[in-house]
Image (cartoon, rainbow, N blue to C red; front, side):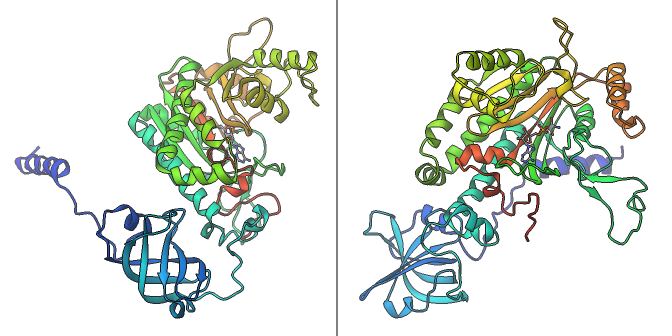
Length: 479
Ligand code: 4AD
């Protein structure tokens, strides 16, 4: 290395370590920062936002302005003539002094002396100051985030992903991006959307083979974990799900973690549990106002449930133990399940709900499912009592059912190849995946967390269509 290069590297290191940047100061402040930063009474401020409501009285009028940075926004006090200019839904800039409020609802309010209408709004604006049904709000997906539920959902969504990001950063996971277009069907369920350009006659003309929207980034994340040891991805995945349940979307977000050098499924469970708890705790810490709102209007047990879930360890049981529990409940006539609960049958929603909501009354990991119920990539356990199981888990949570699915991955070349042949997979398509076991394989495992289901857990809302800004499901792709 030349002396010049050495000096450049040393200056670069100094610069990277010690230089600081001035915080960017934007021309307008959010309502959250105006209300939270200490200001003298009568300090002059400018507030931009949308009018939520206007209350006109003879002497004085009040308007609530919200810019989405907080649940409640700010109360503005205006003279009645000025208030005439304001309509619900209009976008405004209000200037005036910040004064101590006489009302109990807020500490500070804005005494307005200047109004600018940035965007007028007429009387057809669909969001009025009353409770709207979830179905109605869904039909105005482009506006519903201007209301309390829609904006609180987006703030909690943001905080939940921040909490997850903190967890993975602190535990030395590298954030990677897996492809959206893929030639593989990771879950083997056939619920894939095929992609081809509209101006090609033959669907394989562009890529010279069928290509799909990804159902999971797992297989690609495995390649990255087998180079960087610990990785995670967070992105949209797509499933051509016909099921129109409150837990299924055609486009949803999944957080997928993959880590090498673990030998025990229990380590993976520890990571999944800690990541979920840390994210939940982050939301509890940073979104108190929103959680109080959901606790009041949506689910009165929400705050209690979140506290318990962070405090107490999750339950862990094997699939075989779960079947015993379900059979005992059925025998004692505690429960009448519609579907049979014999070893080897898949757990249905009613079984998952019973296990999490009634029997355990908190999140429960069900592990070691029968091999024939699970995809090819899961690591085979040793055959026991003639039963073939795989080293995997589903995390079931009260009121929702499956929130996370994961497994140790089959890292043994011969066993994996045999499983793929048994599943009648085209080995040529998956040669790269087999290569990972040929060139320096390592024990590893990972999991995928359905982000919208996490949002149900964090808000108490009942339908995943309420917690994603523009939901897509069979028959519905508005916007
Ligand atoms: O259990 P799944 O299918 O697991 C996988 O895709 C693995 N390859 C993930 C991995 O190990 N990296 O899906 C993971 C989670 C489920 O537990 C559920 O929470 C959510 O994704 N999920 C859905 N969420 C909304 N709509 C759907 N249609 C969903 N399907 C699965």
